[in-house]
Structures are given as structure tokens and as C-alpha cells.
Image (cartoon, rainbow, N blue to C red; front, side):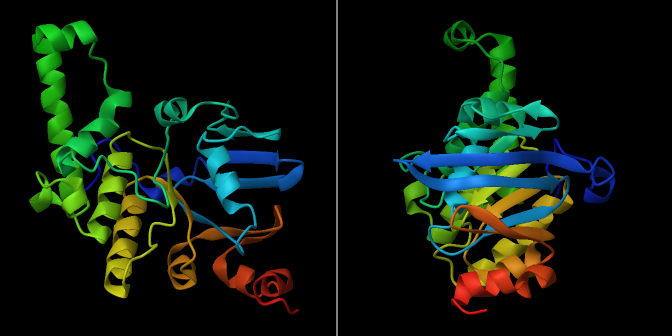
Length: 268
């Protein structure tokens, strides 16, 4: 089942090529450089990963690209529009949505309510309309609920639509976060360690879901420590170490790069 708002296939999207371009991104904390001169390009319709040892700067870069941090230097553009310094809410409206390493759901809301909340950046209803319950507001609320039902079905959670988020299994909570992020109609879906804490069966199921999302026209950016998952799903990846990009390319190229081997194993 396809995501309703996205009908373009990755093959057609690749004709447009670049979706996000980052140039010379730098960020310091307390005088220490977390990132220095990092540049990368994410193409439409691909799955792109950021990997590297602990403390390499992956999360800092990820947080900059999703509006949590502002870069101290450099810039990045989504479809040619400058994004550096925008707030997360502005990022979502522009087409960048994310999940978090530590699950951030509304625990005492149902699964469908969590997804409906994610739709707020694409709604036009006013406070007055909500109070009066006019026909336009009612129609929009119905559409939001239908969209949420579809997305829950899309990620395999339709039978849990009315279960409280806190009562879902860990793997299902991960899927619910993805559904909520998809409700914003992202052009770029950024996933922060989506397989963290999952067992092998859940990870295999997640891989299928991510491939389906990409097939249905959403570009993916992810940080992930599961090397097997990364190498089996990503089109390209960048490797960071000590805040600098040391390698970029297809998985087979990156795996054989001496700098990457040294960064992970401490030997060349």
C-alpha cells in the first residue's frame, strides 16, 4: 500500500538528483569542535546513512539537518532552499521529518491519536473553527483521521489503532514513530537509530518497511549502529570521525576504505 501523498517512484525522482546539499557544516560546543567542514549531498529516492565511531559527530550533524541545532558555520539547502537555522517545526513544513533514538511518543494517547498529532503541520483549521465545529473543520478532522488509519495500516499497526502508545511493544513503538513522521508528508525522512533495541526478527521487518517507504517516493537519511542493516539497505553512506567526513560512497567502497577500517578498528 502506497503512501497517499507520494506517487513518484525513486527512479523518476533520481532524474532530479539532489534533494539536500550541505556545505562545510561546522559546530562547536564549549570550544571543542564537534563538526568541522562537513559536506554531503543526499539524492532523491535514495537511502543515505551516517555512520562512525561513538563521538564522531553523527548526532550533531543529524540534529543540525533536522533543526535541533544551528550550525556555527556552513549551510544546507533542501531543494535549493536554505534551511540552516530553521526551527524543527519549520523543517517539518518544508519537508524534513525525523524520529528519535529515545522514543518520543505521547504515552497516554492512542496510536491513532499520535499519528493525527503528526499531521498538524499540514492542516489549516483555526482555533475558532475548532470551537464552532464548522463544516470545514469537521471535514479536515475526518481527513486527518483517515490519513492516520491509512498510515497505521501502512506500518502494520492497524489492529493497535486504539491502544495506548505506552502499551505497545518496543518494536511497534518504533513503527508508530515512523507513522507519525510520515504524517507530515516528508520529502526527507530522518531516522535516528531506528533499529536500536530491536531483535533480529524486528530488524528484518523494519528493513522491509524502510525499503517500502523509499519505493513509495520518500528519501531516507539514517544514523544506525547495526552495520549489517546499513550495508544491506543503504545506497550510499558517509563516515564521520572526530567531526570530519573521512569517507563517502556505496557500501562496498566504504567498507574497504583504509581510513574507515582504522577509525573502527584502530589499525590500518
